[in-house]
Amino acid sequence: MKILGIDPGYAIVGYGIIQVEGNKLTPLGYGSIVTDKDLTFPERLEKIYRELSEIILHYQPDDIAFEELFFNKNITTGIAVAEARGVEMLVCKMGRDYLYEYTPLQIKNALVGYGRAEKHQVQEMVKMLLGLDAIPKPDDTADALAVAITHSASLKFKDQFRMK
Image (tube, rainbow, N blue to C red; front, side):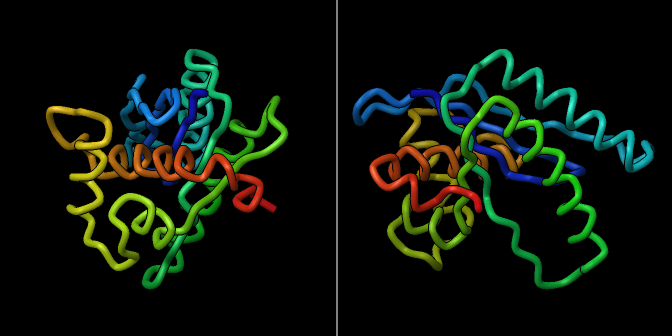
């Protein structure tokens, strides 16, 4: 099974694709979609739509999982990220029955076993579980791989994590 994990955003959208065979996790590709701050917001959304469409077409993931948004400071940034997430969800939903989402707490629990784990602990686990030489950069990319790994660990219970 191929799983695409997404860390939503509009300046940087992290993505990571893993292959799951039994207990073995193999990274197939990962990176980020970066939009130039000098582009208009609609142009940034268009770039995200185009590039994410190409990633999905290339890798043909079986499941796609998102990190749930969490904001505690800037509402203006939160609205822009939510709008971009809507575009990302639309691209990913095309031709699929379901999308899945996990909270940061669920991701930390799945990878580290502790919901209050620090970011570097999660990143180290991503590196170790996927047999990578280095932690993927930027952080959004490592976060997307963590989402994919979390979904792989939840496959038996994935119906509980369907987006509603």
